[in-house]
Length: 554
Image 1 (cartoon, one colour):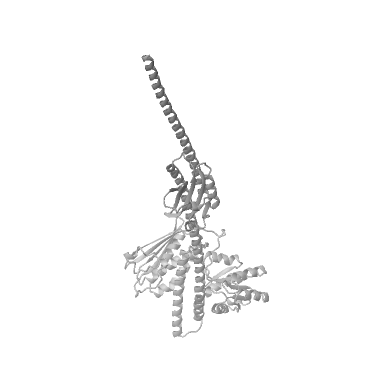
Image 2: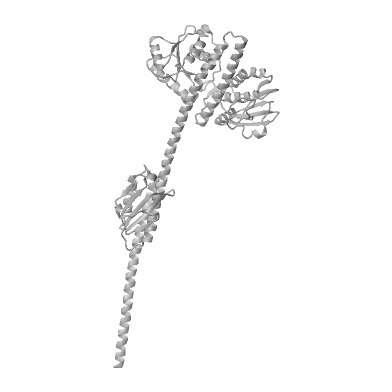
């Protein structure tokens, strides 16, 4: 009996232990099942967030951020049992004009005031959106899940917020770039219009001033009057140089400086320099020599006017700063480059001024009592022009001994068979008898300019008719045949461009010459596109006018 009872007691104990073990096993199994479900839901949630980030990461990079794309983004986020709804509120100050300020369907009254860190309010997770260290709004997620830790969901959904912040930042940068580009384009347009307007407003009265002085020089003057005229011409020439320098510098800063290609010869450059500086050098008591070494092509292709401008500036400076000795220009053609060396025996340039010599508005002598005139723009313009031609410019100088400037300009070789226009040097004065029978119309709203060109034309036995705007010109052509029209471009009521287009449409096919202060390629092309045949640029001289008459009436 005792043994039996002992066996029953042992069996009861073992049964209890087995029950306890079974209970622990069931508990462990339930915990394992719960953990497995939790892990599975976490895995599915993480997979959903990752796929969303990948898909919309590409979408945000490939297209502009808008309300439609953001709505699709929100719809994708709620395609999981964990997230039941999403609300997006953006700050109008940060995203004004980019997207709608609110997207989603969560009742805002359920949400307490936002904080600057992710936080929970019951079943709602609030994520702050920070763009460029400023608050750009909030995302609110309504979440129902007992199997995923909140910390894990904050971590995953914070990635969503970061992606959206990145997209908002990119869109804001793009918007600023567009606005900046638009402002730059508007500024460039305004600058070009201002330069064109100033160009016209300065050159037009200068044309009257210099033209009147030139006409006065052809009259009988006593010694005192001749002295006054000399001063007037000198001041007018100085004013022209200053205006040209300022306008060229303004055009360079505005990106308006362009090259006009023609075919030209070395003799064209040489003749210009001799024509301008022979007498000036003689008056200054110094020598002036132009020398060329080696073989030159018959023709080059380049902007001869700008090359002339560079040479005239450098040679003019050399003569101005040389009181004894000579100024020499040496030209060579090596490896498809025109090499120019301008040497003088003048006062030289102090060493401390070498580093800033090509800076704008820089002069060696800046004192109020300085001896030499000028704006300090000439060398800066030379450097810009040389670089525009893909060339090089440099110098060497010793104070008290002289200066050498070196210019290297690449040029194409031309020929008469090419369609590139030939450079036309100034002709001799036109014969008055050759033009006597021609009828001329001058259209200009400035009486002074009418007077100047009328008197210049009378010197060659031409008596023109005058109009003050394009409408009057059209009426004049209807009543009388004209062999040539000089047409100002900027006039009230109807400008020269519109008048020329209407005259061409009406069948008028005689030469129309633009009277303009325009110096840019676009302005010149506009003259030709509207039907004008040629351009006479203000301020012009009697020789410039004669060149036009010879070309179109001879």
